[in-house]
Image (tube, rainbow, N blue to C red; front, side, top):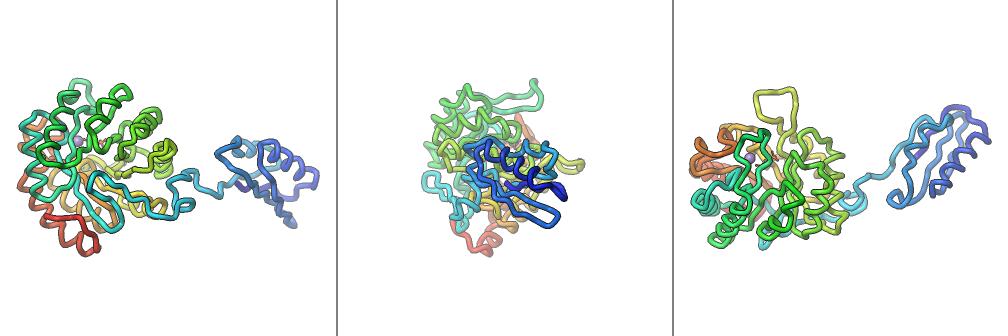
Length: 341
Ligand code: PEP
Ligand code: MN
């Protein structure tokens, strides 16, 4: 941290600030200026109290961070890429993978049929919620444990690793018992107790960006997971809440670009929840590929019109097949492998 002092401070006033810095466990290095003096504070910020409170001292005008708060996942500290492997699927800068499946697991037939269809079209992971975080308490909340059993059967039949959401700490063991990747949804993206429990399961985590989370908040949520010794994190941009109503959410493609500069973790784009309508999924998916995402997550249903959740945005099998074929040249243009149709 750097403390910027107010103009024309006396030596005594500067030494007093240095005393406060030492008291907090940091070593002050003062750069005396003709009019403006600054103090660089050296020390491990994870082990000592925050220096931010010193902004209240009468001599201090600003406290500036010089290091990222997300240390474990930041390129600043961890310059190497942080690829994530799930079974035989590797998310990295050299690969591109499609995660696909229904919004919610509704029945054995619906889920297994979708798993076969998306696999045939080239998806390498199956998604599907057994526990659904619904905005209305009167809406379908998911099949719970029965849904997990269905996902296990779909994986047994297709070999596709499963991505499924954890909505409560209560269910972590059950969900981790079936999931290859635990999804933390947008509504729970800043639920630190849930993030910690999910991380401790040792499963890879697909961390959606919160509905109104800044990039710093999103990356710090990922840091909670990494801090548990679990670096297998897939960041997922799924659109944020803005003033726009034409789409369900606003897909923040800039966020993908920024986050990829900040961290070596793979970034997945979710065009389904961003668009909220099936006709926009393909263009947003193409944009995701172009901006440098490492994969996509797309909702697919045998009969979207009669789906129990997210009817408007789920793709039919045939539209999903078309999307995969359409995306293939964009993916190979980016020089990535692992995407097959
Ligand atoms: C989902 O993936 O079905 C879901 C509920 O996503 P989100 O948390 O992004 O709304
Ligand atoms: Mn959904």
